[in-house]
Length: 262
Image 1 (cartoon, rainbow, N blue to C red):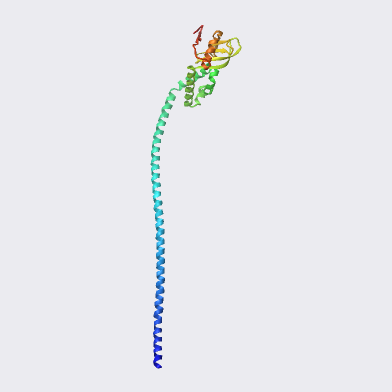
Image 2 (image 1 turned 90 degrees about the vertical axis):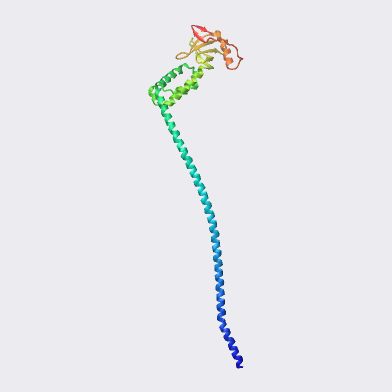
């Protein structure tokens, strides 16, 4: 009986002695599990951060590449602008030189320009009104006095003179047909068809072909000499010029100097 009791006490002692050891081992495993979990979480966080860093790095590298391309493009544009600027400066300098030469030339023939303007003003009275109407705007640009001329740009004056001379030359070398009301020698007025041979002479004929006249430039208006015998020839010439009749040989007096020259 005593022996059994001692054995129970011994077993109880062993159990009591082992309990702290088991408890300690259990705590150690629990801590280890916790550390492993933390380590796994840490590794996962590190991996996430590494992936995020790789993505950011790739984006930054892409942005840097784009910035470099943009920088290269800007450099090329700046070089182009610089080259263009140098070219423009050269062209501007050349144009200024040309302008100075032109101004010098304009100043050198100022007197010639003034005489040309005065001559053209006289031409305004020579050109028949029916032919002059399209040119009246240019004639109005001619300065009437030297004081008025000084207020105008010389280049504009030259352009006006050249334009008028060109149009007058065209009138001189072409035939023209118009319908006008003429002041005749008897003091009356007659509506006629007129054929102008340049600005050297003209032929007029009435609508019923019973009256005709030959005209020459004069001041302040053209002078007309009645020539009813040429009415048919004048009408034929006007119809041919207006493409209302087939071409044929026409005899008309081209000058009046005492008698008529054919």
